[in-house]
Amino acid sequence: MKSSIKKSIIIIMLVIMMLFLNFCHASLLEPKGEIAENQKKIMLFSLGMMLIVVIPVIFMTLWFVIKYKKSNVNSKYTPNWNYSRNIELLVWIIPVLIIFCLSIIAYKTTHKLEPSRLLISKNKPIKIDVIALDWRWLFIYPKYDIATINEISFPKNVPIQFRITSNSVMNSFFIPSLGSQIYAMPCMSTTLNLMGNNSGKYNGISSNYSGKNFSNMKFTVLVQEDNFSFISWIKEIKSKGISLNNNKNIKKIFKPSESYKIKYFSGINQNIFKESIQNCYLKPNNYINNSYKKD
Image 1 (tube, rainbow, N blue to C red):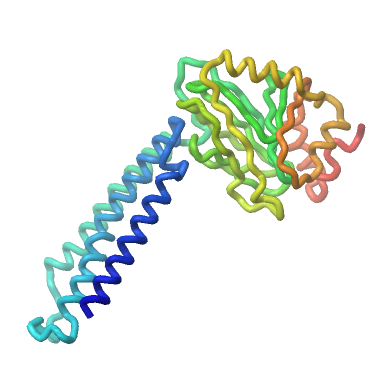
Image 2 (spheres, rainbow, N blue to C red):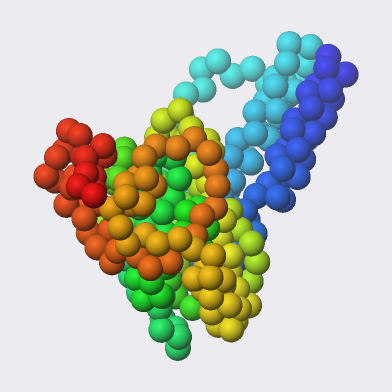
């Protein structure tokens, strides 16, 4: 009996260690932006609060099993016992206090990390329009007259205002290292504000199932060290990009595609984002195939 209990404890400890080692590489625990950093603190705080209940329950379960096992003839048998005020208070007061504390934290952070709330910074924000296609992401920089497929870039410590919609079914725009996923929905626009505090190359994904090639619907996020590097990236796109100012090219990129490729466009139709939403309202049952129908 002792050997089986010892073996069970070892297995449990190994599973816990594996989980912790696996989380060491999780993007959510290695935030590179202001929003993600705050979300990490909330997540760890909530985990700690829940462990106040979970850890004692696990140890009490093991202790009861050992103490009241059949072979332990010294354990006291009290079949008529049915109530203890102290135990009832302990069992109810601690969860109530935890829920009360988590409610206050949730209320404050919900307002503080509201996706549409502008981030405070001495730098002017960069606006990026995002359209979820089947199965890739179209990013439009209206101010710089460029667009990209599956790649975005911006300087660190500069707020980014994303205006997001979908030209297909519902998707979810998510950059785990920078925080806050938000849905990209047809016929409407959602807003997300993020900021990268560390330069680097990160991954962006669609975290909502949207069809057969959903798992390959990823994009690259380049957080530049400074504004000079960002402007160099803009110039590179303008030198390599093809025009996105005619209906033929626009219609071509709106077609479903299963290949993950990064593409650059220079010279864009400034109304692509607006017209993507309008086409949805005008032709709700077939707006994808009819978008930009007239060449």
